[in-house]
Length: 462
Image (cartoon, rainbow, N blue to C red; front, side):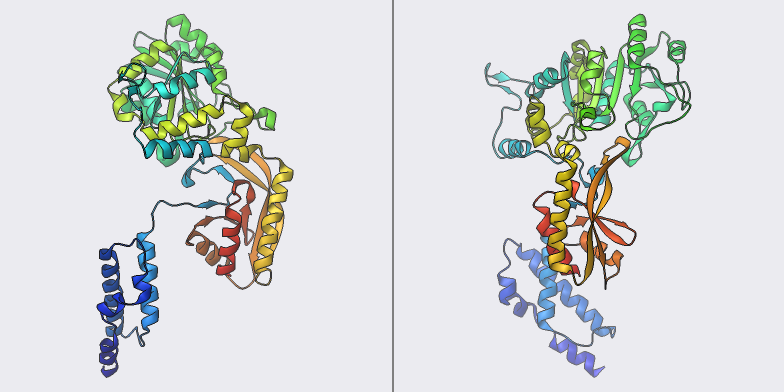
């Protein structure tokens, strides 16, 4: 008991901690945060003393704990993360990284006033969609286009406009669920459209669609199965036949292609995925797709197609609730401009660059990281370059494995789970994979700036 009393008396005062040079030198930290953290730390130690947990006091340790706590509280919660998983469009890690041009456009637009809804030529109110509509039309061949805040919103707006209180015919095999338990049937219900399921999970025929058509049919909806594949005894109606059916009964055909691809990646060794241009060329009335997947831009839902339908959507009151802001439009416009030159798009848009990177270049990058790690931790871990497979991610090409090279690290004196946890909790969090009791760093999804950070962090952790 006497020892507890002595320990309590030896606790440093709040004022003495405030006068410590290390605390004084903290920059850009609110005083309320500093004083609150000091009191929290002292209260915690005081409680520890009374409970017999704390048996000695170090002022230096107290100050260090306070500084660490302040830094943790003062840093942004949404932060940069190093993606070493090899999944290029990692939904949990923010999907597509923006190009340098897109980032510069966002900065320029956000820190200044802009002509967001002002027609500079006419000197009157303008439309925010005008900044990207012509570009989308030029790239895809569509008559008109508009943008909302994500692809689920795009589908909802299309159905709300063309199919409210009417039936939307869709194959059972296309009633997909995407990330976060968002389901196509639920989105359709929120739009006011009535779901008319046809066919079976694995086989749907043209006559299934035609048999379902009636006076209350609003649209024929096709949903691209972007995040899964049905293999074996299957049949799906080609989009061209659905288009002919729609024309026969004067019903618009809507296609949600999910991940918006503008470039045929088959020439880069991938399985063919339908591009937006292909759908427009086939005469689809309305096509919806994402901006932050294969397109490589910001989160957005893009709607392209026939002008008569797009014009109706622009007048829908739901459009205002789903509209995008100036930063999204700036990033999207800059991204779209890169697509005017395919070679520039592949070079400058990070996700396309990562996916199409030459395998020999990837191998060279893996050996670079391996050398950096070996120079720092060779006595504390085994490091080697291994053949591996990357993933596209983002619900695109789910069965496609992309050959890559990774760096495998096996700690000698640390538990692998503890090291992996330490990577995630480091100042710049690093997300890697564990396989066969080794940490796997796939260099496909690493930027040049990430290598030193990984080497420094592993050195510290081991």
